[in-house]
Image (cartoon, rainbow, N blue to C red; front, side, top):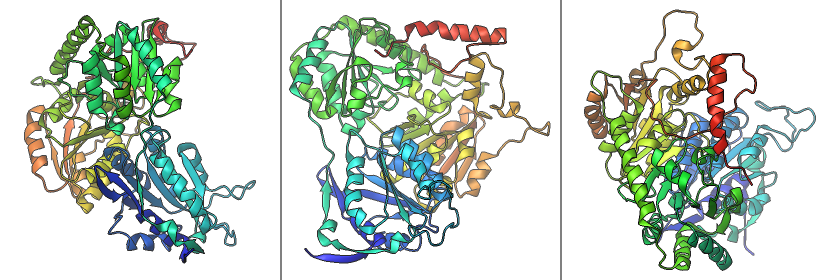
Length: 616
């Protein structure tokens, strides 16, 4: 066997560029980009190797380890998990900054390869700069924090361990059932250690995403249960996007006349003008979808983990006779709440299940109810998104304007705060996909970083980022990153002067406003300081516009579209104008109260608990 002597850093870089994936018949680099902030722990050995391969895996410099890793997450999501981004950091705080991004990838089942430096394996220089010393266990470092938010974790103590670790890390990230982030920690001295690697280890490898096929007995059990239904409902989840099964979903629903509702991750899996699309389900959904869920006697959940915002903390299903059939690649998700599991990929499973159902079509009365309630929801949306002269703008009006003005191929991105609900509740899907609400981890700060990564995945179309003033203040430096690297975005900053959606929750549970809206925060001056977001964005190199209301939005958006670099539109938003739907959500409330208003609010909240479906 031929061997080649390489350092750990050389071997890692050489292996990464050998990994390819076939997408639509074309072979691409599996790792499409790398984001790096270099320091001790990754600069002396690994950075140089990244330079040598930058024509095949370009390395981009972010401004913060958390945001650059979130850009890599958004890049993977926009590529439907078929291409992966890398993020590398130094030891200590550089690595710790990236833990939040790992949580985003983990909660959303998205691939991300993280490579961080670590303390010395020899321990001779200990304690080194940025080392967190543990008196009882010298093997612990900052990198151990990643264990809670990764699917695969390893510390490379010898170069030859790469032969075992790298294939497993990549398989984890590409496995549709356990997809998630992988982490490698490499001690500073180990980067330079050498080993006689087998040359065959670095041969080109063309990967593919597996499509698990369900067992026949599972299909038969599911079909028998579905055939007995009178009011079946499909819940379309994010797995439809990753499986590229939107067309199969449409054909299945239309053949069997089954209404469809969408989760947050499953938004834009079906066009809004399809009469079977009854809108978004759950807390951030529509009364139409929640009506259908309340009356359904069978739910076919496809590619969804049935998160609490989808199920209204398991209160949206109000038919006691309800049965659940779940199509999912992950057994963990497929068996939730006594579901009949069909373990398989949506693209291959839906046609197989359809064959088992033969030519059965469910009643026009049931699907007709869906059309009636959905038309009512659409009318409500039209009212929400229509500006009212003389009134302050609302989130819904901004969403409606972006929806109307976006062009085919454009992607919309948001996360956390009030915008995910407003976008999910009011967006009318005119194209499949191109829609990213990060709500698995609901991570403030994802928006702008995610927009940067999404633009890398969509170089020929605009990415429109919707971000609140709170999230903007938390993480905005990738406006500069996008200007520096030439990845233009349109960023719409919705300024409602604080964390308004949490203030809303605070008030709805009987509590008084405190420390959320800026006006309610403790300060030592009576004057309320406000941020000039347009000037701030302009200082980072963006073209920026502050508008005085929705009557100026279209013109500003046209200028942003025409801009040759990232453009930022700032609009003041009414902190009390919210879209609402009839859906309960479980929040931790006190069992003992000292205030009548709080007691009444909690009593009203608890009244809806009677609809909560038990877990067995």
